[in-house]
Length: 487
Image (tube, rainbow, N blue to C red; front, side):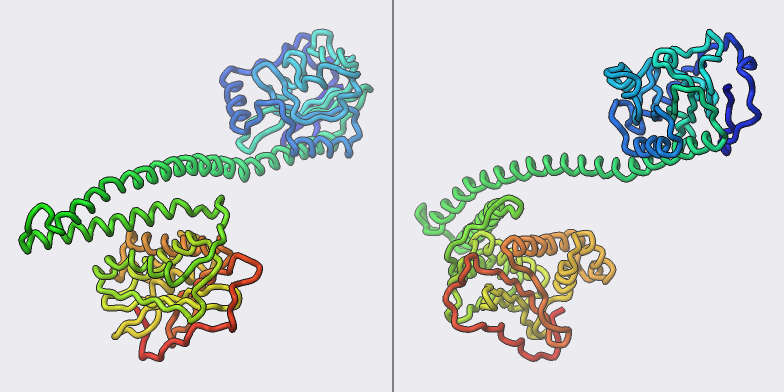
């Protein structure tokens, strides 16, 4: 017997005899337009290849456990081939049979076109009773008698294949059997589409990120080379201005000496910045290992401040470094510490107001070097600017740059004379300090309160099991009392 089943609920109408089927019923012929739509849907779901699909495997195994039928599969139908995506029982068709080996069969030998044609379940209780001209080559080849299939339909209502079961013995398929097959097909298709919706965008994003990382690496390498090439003309300019300033080629007027000094100072500032950019290239938290070496924090700190002195003069600021007695020598990674100190002070300078004193205090806390930074201002008191406090708070919450920028917008800091471009320089420098401190095994924290003012505290542990010989744990000196805090 054979019958069609209503697609709405998987219920069969009254069985019809085989004789009611045309003895000369041809293989269902799908229009080219419908075939192309099916192929497009299969391609969009990445189902063209022969790989097994876990969601379909689960669906067909569920059918096997529930109905106990010998053979089953879930397939997608290409232009002239039916590709099996999940199967069970194929080994029972004979060792090394082509169906099990290739997991596909010609569409002309399959019964699936009948299902695709009407997009409804179709069942054959006994294939041997079907008219001689019916396309039963697959059934005859493998000695199959019973067949039942339901359409595999996507969420876009496109039929792309079938879920089918077969048996060697004639078998009547009840309405409940067909309904269960339809349910399993819907579940398998829905589960696969759900997985695609979550994994494919991630894969695409990861690919885009990898490509962007490669482009950024090339760009940074090129920038590094260009920066290195800047040293030669800057060295020439410094040499010439030095000779002109010593009046080797003749006396200079007062205005000429002033101009020569401006060129010399500007060139020296550029040279310092080039050196800092080249040093920045030596730091790579992802790949570079820390190099433990004795570091004189007093000498290193003054090197950094000497580099920033021209900028401090331009901003009418004073830089002040103090080091706890007998706490100057540490085993650290010098390049990392230098970059941390440079960018922390640089960021603070751009956020602090004119006539401020930027204080950097080095001390020991436990087995770590502690660098405390804050601002003294005769009118605003002691502490950190509000913008620096907001940046540090966002960093402590473990958020990225987007959260930092959102926080600044929400708090109205962008309306207080700080443009997005200014803020990017500030929080990028502080973000780099944060990552470098973590790379060194330390951290960056706020310390203080609204009433007493805040400090930026950077803790960097010594890079050996026993720290340098130090007598006592010293805490940074308390902040002087003041009527206000830095703004």
